[in-house]
Length: 265
Image (cartoon, rainbow, N blue to C red; front, top):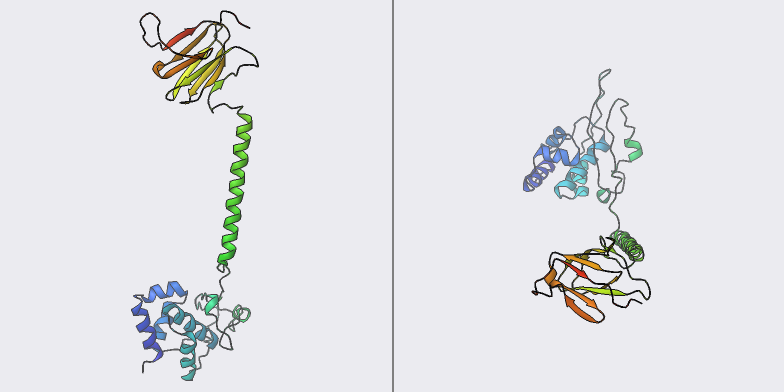
């Protein structure tokens, strides 16, 4: 039957871990782990720490900690803490025991007792992890609440923009006709950049004209419609849709003038 050390060593090698890897994972000094695998337990530490280290190391290797500690107790080994020379300090290591592997009974070191070991000069401070895993259901509720809050914020932003844009496309200057004011309609077969000015050079429309959307512009005197793609633009006047063409030769005009209505209201 394998002794404790042989079982520890075999389990560590089975996990392809070095002593150094195990020491970093458990926060236990490598020389202690070497002694455990050599079946040497009189390492100069208080009994409660030896049992705690064995239990922690067994948990890392996937071995039953209670069984390992019970086999250790059955050996009848009683370790005594070495008395350090005057002014010397012994560093045992820092052990972090996962909450789920903490056993019940007399073998478990009390954190309050471990914080003040028998040797007043020792720097060993066993600690328990403070960041316990959250309940999955709680995490789900928090995530759902955060998503709902984000969605609400987006809806508020969208609503404010919709109310303040007055129907304009972002980045487009567009003066809407007043009630009863003569107007022309602009329509694009494909998205196009259009500029409309009145006889005084005032901008009535400037920016993107979305495809398929009819947009009215005030008809204040002679208007000038400028567009780099005039073949895609239609101008609606008194219910008729006209293209930006030269009446003489039928060529498309990138800059066309629309005359004022003959009988303005």
